[in-house]
Amino acid sequence: MDSENEYIVEAEVPGIRKEDIDLNIEEENLVISVNRTEEVNKEEKNYIHRERRASSMSRRIRLQGAKLDEITAKLDEGILVINIPKNIATNSPRKIEIK
Image (cartoon, rainbow, N blue to C red; front, side, top):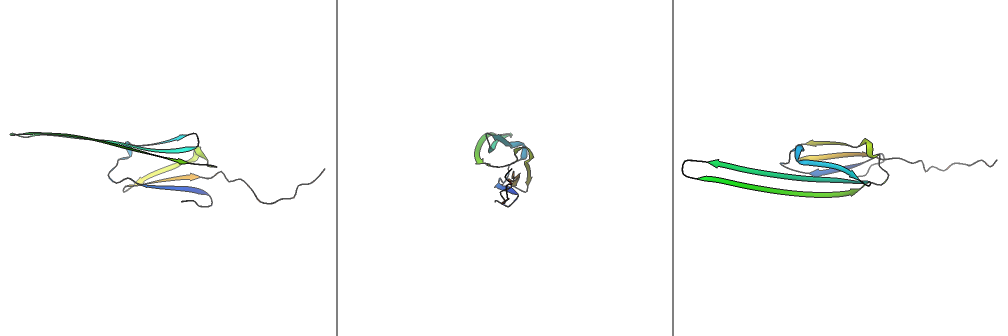
């Protein structure tokens, strides 16, 4: 989303813990990376069940005109919300005095 004062990025990441998410800034790009590993080790009397799963994903979003040092992020019920304040330049018309 794009509002007047900030960009708002929402990403659905159900079942992902915040420890599995990396947020980085690289050359005016927001990089969202998720690396998840799961391991099941179950030993019963008659059998052994072992299973490993790994998944990863990455998204890159260009942030032109953003205040990169004021970005905040929150993970709530599987929704990652990232607020990125804009570096608002004044483009309002004004008179320039000639000296």
